[in-house]
Amino acid sequence: VSRAPHRFFDERVSGERVSDELPPVLEPVRADLERVGAAYARLLSEVSHRTGEVVQPAALFTGKRLRPALTCLAARFGERGVTEPVAQVAAIVEMIHTATLVHDDVLDGAEVRRKVATLNSRWGNDLAVLAGDVLFAKAYLAAARLEDRFASRYLAEVVGEVLEGEIHQDLVSRNPDLGEAEYRAIVRGKTAALYEAALVVGSRYGGAPEALGRTLGRYGHHVGMAFQIVDDRLDVTGDEATVGKTLGRDLSEGKTTLPLILWLQARPAAERAEARALLEAAWDDEERARLLARRLAADGALRAADAVALSEIEHAVVCLEALPAGPDRTLLHRIAHYVVARVR
Ligand code: FPP
Ligand code: MG
Image (cartoon, rainbow, N blue to C red; front, side, top):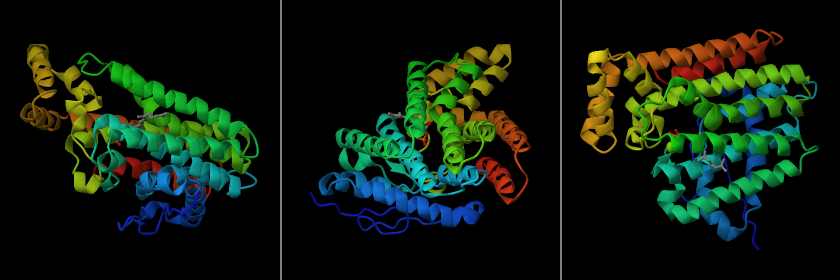
């Protein structure tokens, strides 16, 4: 079997330009991220040539590299710092994340991800699901090869939590009565759990004390919550070219996200029935969906959702107070604010 090397961060794949733009806030971890990129490329290079052809475009999903950056930063709080196992575990978390996105794009029928065509739009749903599974399998194999079983056990649990979040989301689709608490439980599973994990594994393999790892994990949880709240808000109003993925699908998929929840809650009693009717109409009618999106903006529901995201960031920042001061802590602080700056 030929084992063609696949490239991750900075090469052309299938003739397409891979964006190597690192968000400026992550510049101080560039060297660490290059090690993670090399570890990721090695994982992908173990895929056979024919399978690689299908999976390879996922390597184009370079994204913002927030999770690997957080893993490396967490490791810097340990006595070992960013060693090879840390680079590997960061690559493993990123690969799991990419696998969930490959599957998510199938479920959502999305055409664009991280500014490139999704695997489902290139190969169809059947191959895209299998390609996502290949990424999962590679990630688990790499975790099993680490020096201990921590990542294997812990990441298996986390993936279970991600799936619970996704299943929960599906079970409550087209439910106008979904409340904020249930929405938060979904977001915790589908997004915040893996953010938390990125920091927990980084601190563990960097050799940080367990208590520090838990604090870093809580910071990651809050950053992840804020990230998804912002993501859901951008789905309503974001510009696809800037955000780099298919947007505006949440409404037609019947996802009751935070702006909607807050908007429905804030309607005066006399307007409730009309508001609900508009939402129900928006599930199947693009014109009504556009009208609803305008209402969410005009009635302050987007701003209200942004405020919730900001309060998550404030919680994240409070966690940082328990960490030793220094440039790494400052950077975690900046990253937390960067996550919510996307809406501005
Ligand atoms: C993005 O949500 C999706 C996730 C955060 C997780 C998706 C996870 C799965 C589909 C489960 C995958 C399988 C396993 C085995 C874990 P979104 O659609 O709200 O965001 P988007 O706008 O980026 O698509
Ligand atoms: Mg999606």
